[in-house]
Every structure is written in structure tokens, then in C-alpha cells.
Image (cartoon, rainbow, N blue to C red; front, side, top):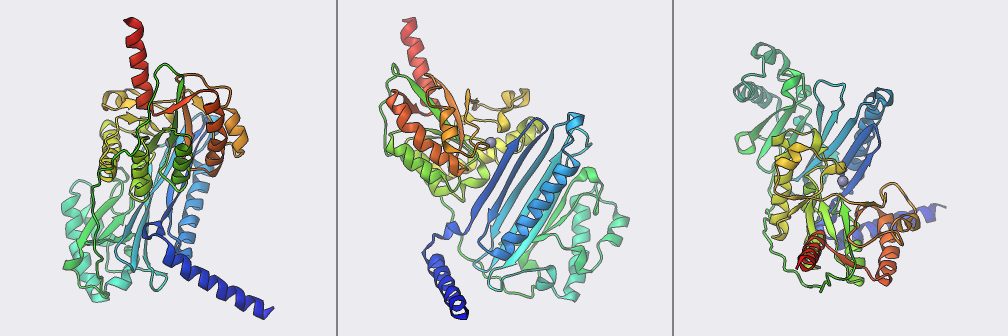
Amino acid sequence: MKKIIILFITMSLLFGIFWSLGRDKKMEQEIETIIKQDQHMVLSIIYPKTKKPKLDQKLKTQIEQSYDEFMKNYVIPEKNGHAELNIDYQYDKVNDRYLSIILDEFISTNHLAHPITKKYTYVFDMKENRFLTLEDFIEKNELKKLVIRLQKQLIKENPTCINVKELSTKITPEYKNFTTFTLGKEDLTFFFQPYEIASGSCGIIETKVPLDQLSLKIDIELGEEEKKFEKVIKETSKIINPNEKMIAITFDDGPGKYTKDILSILKKYDANATFFVLGNKVEIYDESTREIIKQGSEIGNHSYNHKWLIKLDKEEFINQVNMTQDIIKRTTGFTPTLLRPTYGSTNNIIRKNTNLDIVLWNVDTLDWKIKKPKKIANRVIGKVKDGDIILMHDTHKQTVEALKLILPELKKEGFQFVTVSELKEAKMIKKFNVSE
Ligand code: ZN
């Protein structure tokens, strides 16, 4: 028995070493996506899997806790309210040793005066496999200096929010006052939750201290930063016959780990599709994102972090769209012209404040809910007609399998698979020909 255990440990160690040598650096991170909706709530949870078990466990525990609390306290069916939970993250790899992650939690319902926002931060030492606290960075006597600096800074930056008298009693030189912070390439950022040092309506208060102005206990060597702007050239151009029947398949909520699989199935059947991507995932799956364009498919905008767009004010909405446009442009050189609003809901703020074409769908595969590929495929095969726009998601395994069933069947039925823009163009050509 002992021998078997030792063999098993050796094997897993060896496997671990080969695995970590072989994988792409970017694949250190994978993104988990949970997006659901029913008549009482919408929910979007997007968080990283770092492959550091200790860190992943902690993130998962927090997500589960937030989810349970949301379902228990905010989704109230009988009150007919629509609750929203949005969890998003920020990931900052400072260098090969240190990693900072923030989970951003947002809860909103009709019954709350203000949405609830909260930040959970994790600074992780990958070499020592442990979480770091402020004590790891700052000596006790340095902490006193830091506190004076923070007090001044907070008052200066938030003149209307902070009560000066209260601040000095709340921010004292004790490590326990500074549990929510992150380490960046250039600074330490400190966060204070709503009501912690200011009134609730002021939200989360944040302030930065440049690293070069602190005497830190540890040495932080910065890795080289890679910044790029790549213009991707379409490698294939398909001939579309506007007089033959066609459909536009669309994939929401990616890019993700299944996007590449989907692209290779599309390629096999000479198919184009439209991918409505989330801005916060583009950099992590930048190769897949570029591959979409290379293959002749199209990228559309699906917001930055899947916030329920109809609940945002004008400025927040524009921000969600522009941040996503910028990151797609930077990664692929392609500028999207299409917007698919989250949860398929639109309002006047959305319609009036974007030049992008708003694209919904008329065939919903429910692939996020239905687990059996065959059942998903049966919602499409034999049911779609010329000009239909089909909704799918490149965030589920069953979608990949369903697509393998759908494409050969529809091809047999004579359908061309086109992007939403190609579908629009074909419709225009047809209209023009008819009126002539
Ligand atoms: Zn979506």
C-alpha cells in the first residue's frame, strides 16, 4: 500500500512538473463563468482559476458565500422584485512571485436604496504559497508614517465623504485596519468598504500609495511588461450567395476555454459566426480572440463585465461599452459595430447612447441551461429558417458538442453560416434587388 502511495505521489509530482513546463504562460489563468437568469433574478459571476489550489479554494469559498447570501436575502419571489448579483474580478500579476486579485461584488434589488458593493482582496506569494498581509510589507514603525499619509490623502481625495474627526479614530496604526489592499506594479492600493470610513452613499473608498515612496520589508522586482497592439488579418474570405438561405449563429459571454474548440468546428464546416465578447476576458484569451477575426468570423460587444445594462446610468453604460471596444481594438485591430445587451434587455439609455447596432436573437438554444447536446441541437435542427439569429454561449462544454450536431445537419439543409453583419448586408442586397 505504502509503495503505491509513494508511486502515486512521484507520478503526480512528475506530471505536475511536465504540465507546468509545457503549458503556455497565459494559461496560468482560466476564467470561470456562471451566468443565469429567471423571473426573479439575474446573476453573473466571473472569476479566475489560478491553478494555485490554496488561492483557488479561497476564491471559491468567497463566491459560494456571496451566492448563498444573495439567494437567501435578496431574491424574494413573492415581492416580484428583480435582484442582480454581479461578481467580477481584477487580476494583477506583479511579477513571477506576487499576484493580486480583487473580487468585486455588486448586489442590487428594487428594495435596496443603494446597490451593495464590496471588495475582497487577495495578495498571494506564489513562491511561498501563502497569502500576504500588510504586515509582510510594512514594519510597525513605518505603519505609523503610512497611517498619517493615508489620513491626509483620504481627506484630500474625498472632501465631501469623509468625516475628519471619525477618520482619526477609525484609521489607527494597527494592521487589522488594513486588510483590504492590493499590491500592484507601481503601488499599494487600500480599499475601505462602504460605511467603514465614510457614509454608505460614497461607496467603496480607494487610495493608492506609490511603492517607491514606501520603505518595504520585501523586495519587489518587476518583470517586463508586454504591451502590444496587433492588427489581425482575415485569412479566409467566404463567398456568400445572398439568394441562398443563411443563418447567423452567435456566441455570448466568451471568449473562454471552449472558444478555440468552437472555432475549429466552424472552420470544418466553412462557417462564420459572431462572438459577443466580454471585455474583461479578452486579454486572457487574446489568442482565441484574434483567431475569431483571422477565420473570418465577427466580434461584437457584450459589455465589460456582464452588468445588467438597463440598470446603469448613461455614464456607466457608455463606460461598459467603450472599455470593451478599446480592449478588442487593442487586441485585434478590429472595431466592433454590434452590441448585444446583457440578458437581452434594452432601454432608451442603451438605444440613445451608442452608435453600435443592437442585436438580439430569435432562436434561443438555452444551451446554458440544457445539459444534453442532442436536446440543444433539436431546438435548432429542422426549426430554423432563412435569416434567423441563433443564441449560443461559448462558455459551456455541451455547446461544443451541440454545434458538432447542428452544423452538418443545417449544411445538408442548404444553409450558409454567416456573421450578423454579413446577414444584414445580404438582406440589404436582396431588398435592393427586389425594389429594382
Ligand atoms: Zn450574456
